[in-house]
Image (cartoon, rainbow, N blue to C red; front, side, top):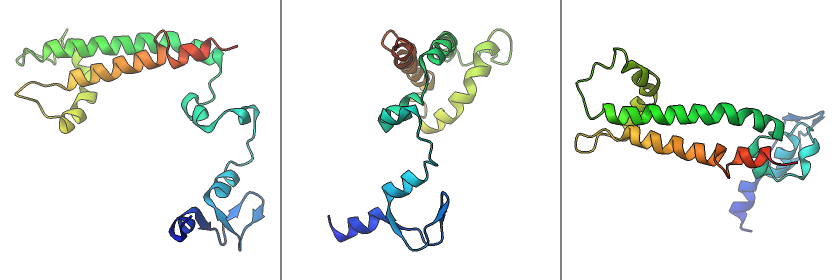
Length: 157
């Protein structure tokens, strides 16, 4: 290991109190500092890799079973609203502030405004509803699809 990498991996913690002890003169590497900052919360999930802990946030199967029937229809409804916004974008003179157009306009516009700043219209066509429809469809499939993370988690024993 080079000297530069060794310097980057070590942190001087002079005067910082971690847990009950004062580590005023020790030099610790980043892994030791991270272990001290875990605050001693070593539970039943110690055998689970950190990456899986981050992805699933320690959800248990019962919680996943409760979330699926709520999250699935919510994501599907938003996907449908973005499909409506795609069709509405074909008719730029629609009165979007009036019923029934406001039902699709109001919930989707807060997502589309910042996205339009990143992705300007291409040839006069607003593609941001297509982008959001793709993102929501992807999330729907990854989380609550037939092989989704929450579905697989809910099937664990």
